[in-house]
Length: 233
Length: 136
Image (cartoon, rainbow over all chains, first blue to last red; front, side, top):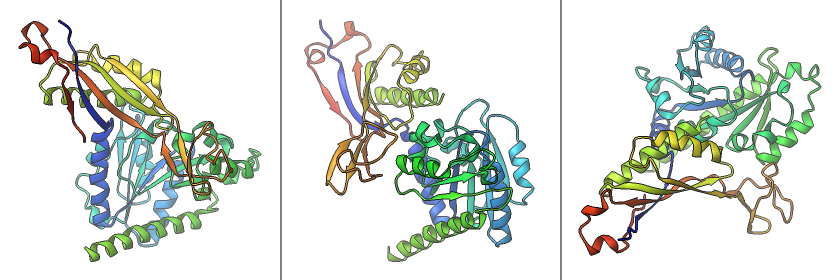
């Protein structure tokens, strides 16, 4: 007796469960007026340093901000960021190389999101794995530092291709590293044509006003377009 | 090594589908991996075996189709396959394009299910090929 298997044609995303949760979270963030920024880079690019400065400046400008920060182990980054005065929570993944939507959701419990304008998610330092996981963010930022080499985008096109904006960090070290700015810009644009690129140094403050302005414009765009569509419906 | 997480999601999806459709053993699953999905084929194959242990999909064949990147060029008004994912531009006219039409897939396409105990099958209808289509 031959057994012909039944074939179920499914055509569904493998990460459907994560994607659906992320979609719900995104809708909720939008409804509450929270701009969610997912920061992705390799370890040591300076996500925490940039975020520390960002939280500080946004707080000074009267925005309410919060951050969740992912690491395999330790709460060092959360403690560092909490010095800004913003509410910060550490997600320790104990070996997991990326953040997933449910981890973020779990760490937002108890926060009144309607009082928050910007929520930053500092992803695990990794230029491969976080690319596949939607966290419900409205802005995905890929960071690369001048110390990492100009060809980072060519080596990790998958991740750079998902970025809404690329931030070059540690520009104060550019000269010492003989950083070839033109080549870096060329490489970013080769893998992600049209992506905005910002150049910053969290140490010297160079490029920080432009970065803050970019965030504020994003917040304004998200929030106002949502209000406009809410009024229409 | 996020392929292990991806494999767990895959196994969960497949075992749920199997139980929703009358149970049985999963003999094969067809998966589509886009070149840009950031999942490594061999790593997924390795992790799948680990993730599927002890489930109804334990010995299933994982059949992976790799999907190349295709972009749309607004100048040529045509879709092209991209040979080089370090350069997102039209292979014909050279215009940069971020309009990706294929190559990001991380999809379960279909599942092949076999009834658990063939000796207890109920006759001819079990032998005829039945196809259930479930779209989601």
